[in-house]
Length: 422
Image 1 (cartoon, rainbow, N blue to C red):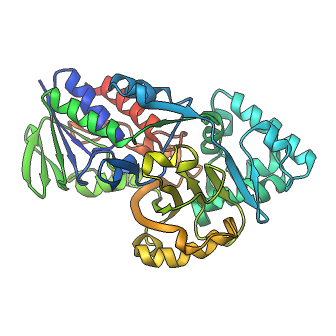
Image 2: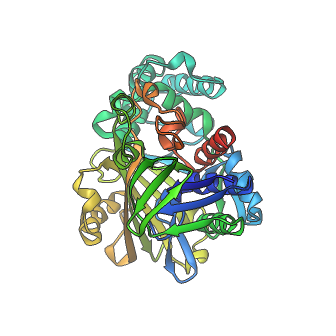
Image 3: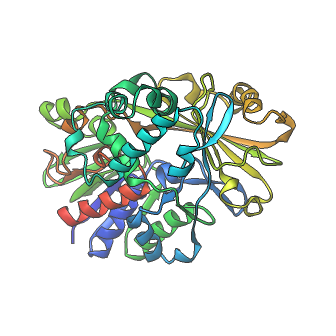
């Protein structure tokens, strides 16, 4: 029996730990946060009512995550809907989530709508993005969909997510956004936190340990074992899986060769931020709205209770105002009240009737290393699972390329890792 430590208690770490435990190994999960779930973790808006800190759902194509949810006995709480996705352009909401709605999308000339629809269909049908390697999304979209499609639709979306690096983003990443996603969405009624609590319990049931609220300080190879130093002490393991961001793993692990660091301690990532609002009435009629008009201090408005009923949340209408920003951006450190003062005036551009008196509560959350900057040379810096340190393995969102980060690809990566190393 091998004694494993898994660093990180998100979807990837918990799934890896569960699969190791099911194979008879001894497993300890070490997570800095007090709860399991990582970026998909939730918070209680009141006792017993949970919501994700950052907007979350699954696509109909996310079959690996759905299979895990069913395995955990939660399938009866999984439900799917087809909520409205809209784009705010020139002060007008336009539904833009199907071929039919694209044909009605007035900001684009009809010929450009038809052209864009044909190209999107081709990307959806393309089985893999090999032919797209080495190209940026910006240049490819402009060539095949046209300058107007980029200016009106895709340019603002890329700039909203990647800021000043929008022009560097690799086309295979954009292919995955189109190829993988569906208009139909799954949600685990009651919140995804119950999935991660169940995973943690299953790990313990299999004889493993979960140590939440414990920060890893260093990892080093000593003789025939790996010593993991935490703020609670040190312990020796036969093998370690780090699911932390690659840069963070490189900072924590002693003795990694310089050649490894030069190749894999690389790249940039943005932090995620969400200001979550509780209102006493609906704000919009859409679930997801992309803010393609200039000037907004948030890139997406996600009205969760246009997907799940407000009655699930004590009658509250819940709205996420979401952003990705460089990790030194002041927004990631701003107080809740500072954010409310900055963001709320813009809601009158979304709904002219909005008044601050609609607000009944608000919460602010930020997380580092949430969105890798996927440039054209990104794939050359994806680390293998094995590292030069015997017994040390790495698995993180950096390795799901060309797919975007998300619960489904984290679960799939964990299962592939365990199949390979255990």
